[in-house]
Length: 550
Image 1 (cartoon, one colour):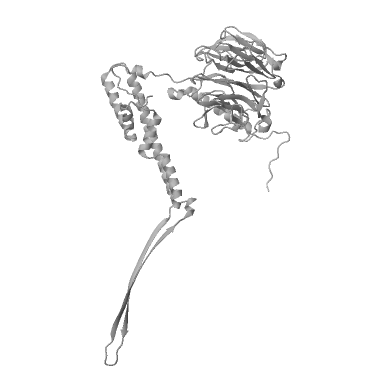
Image 2: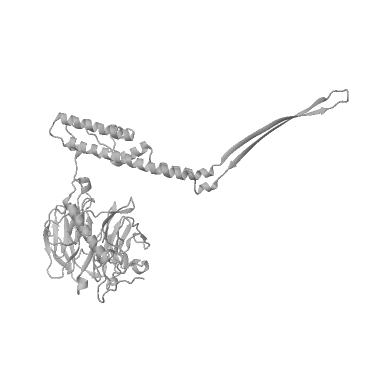
């Protein structure tokens, strides 16, 4: 056998292509390349632009943003908190002005909140206590400060929807105020616990501590632990997945955030999202399909979807679809500190270590106003989903058809093979009588015998309940049908949006060039005919009957 080359004593082992450090370096290089490519190739289509994050820190002097809060009572009003300062924007983050600044070396704005009862009171939870502004950020007053550093480090705030109760969670301890923050009392049950998130509902509070989740009804002094961290076996603060290629210093705690939608409660843990009903202590793990990492550090709930942040980016969970989708396009940092959404789910903000990012709604198109003139020839049309559905039904390529065929193939074994038989015969007997020497032979015919018979037979092959040879043919038909359906959907989608762009051009046409307008109208009619050919005339019928508008 050959001898391997001995390694010199004290020499470092050579880093192979699969070494974690090499993999992290490759990932870093690919990320930089992707960001440069995105910067050089901006997207101009507003339909795609509305799902891309853009930097929204004009006027913010600091790099990292710790918190962001959209003030629901005042359209356009947003506050952002950094390490040293609080910034205010009155135009959905278009421009920011500094309204508050902390002093000291280790200061930081941990969380921002506001009074939901219409008093325009803004709260800033900092590492040096709680500051409150009663004039929407113009002036600030310190309202709470603990006796030591851990009790002064306020992490989170929650306000009762009804009444003036406010609770704040610190790095050590939970405090409650019954007069909108003028006076505070410590909750003895949490005196030695770290509070990571708090939430207020209609008549109750939730507290997310370092050992579990607690629930209290308004008016009661008792706290019930509805989630025990030890029982569920969640990861501890220092238990970092060694197979994760991300930087180990960005640690995710076991319990990080809590949110609610209607009576559903979501807690964001180091091992996924857990779901329960309000006040309940039974938890189920939310479907994680589509997530790149189970380690979530922040979550918010809206009437339509959940928005969660992990070390792999931001992900969106729509309740109807029941799965997660990557929502990180445009972000230059995956270290997400906080998320917030406007009251109408229009503007979405992400506070990251590399600044503040925003997703803005698409521009509003007032089609009715623009088409109200004498050239209004563009009626309201159905949406793309209706057109696609009509095309599928007209071409008979619905997935339900294959499901029906598979079910029919299975139940075919319950139907027997039927066979009928019929037989009959007609016989007669003839005997020979030989006479004497001088007598001739005589044939004697006996009586006729008639027989008639029939039969019926039923045969079952029950093995076809498990597998039928028809399944192979159905699989072939299914592949062909999927390909045909995709071709039809691609074609009708392409034509639909070309027609939509042409409608925009006609609506915006102000040069009154009759020749050009006429050509566009002819092209619009041609595209309408193409869609009708793929949908059996669905588009024209919808337009004539005043169908669904865009």
